Image 1: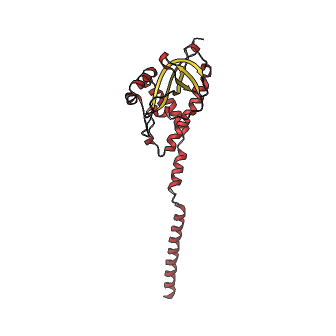
Image 2: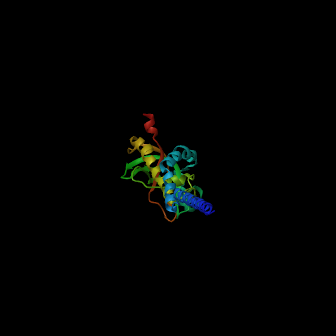
Image 3: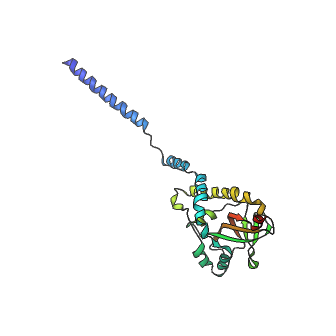
Length: 220
């Protein structure tokens, strides 16, 4: 009888040991990840370059027809800035910065260090610059109205998009149209610019180009 009791006790001990071993193995296989690590992995999964390229090729072309006429917008900004902002401005809700999607044409007056200065009309001479280098702008992203900050888990990802869009502008707009940038050349453009609501009057409106064209170059 003593032998049977010892056997039962040994079986229970073996069972408990097996259960403990199973719990230990399960515990080792499940590792709780810190929240910062999870956020980091989520951030790595987002590719700003891919997003910007899709935006540039698919989303942006759909809204270019809504671009405001640059000369008319300039006149409205001078006569009723509030109405111009309410009608044509876009904002992500941060501060008093507004972005405008615009189109127009003019004549290149001269080449500056940051871009080319345009004369749109006698009354708007040297008031518009097409930026061609060294720009860090959210204008195209925000003026499009199709990219919302609430769709992204962090402002870092949201801001990365602008950097990639600006890179596409350099590669696909400016680099491909260097032959247009000569004084006296007519220039047609679609682009975007930023304006602070609190600025009384912008001395120079700097447009980030989306599309560039010159009838003079086409006729050659």
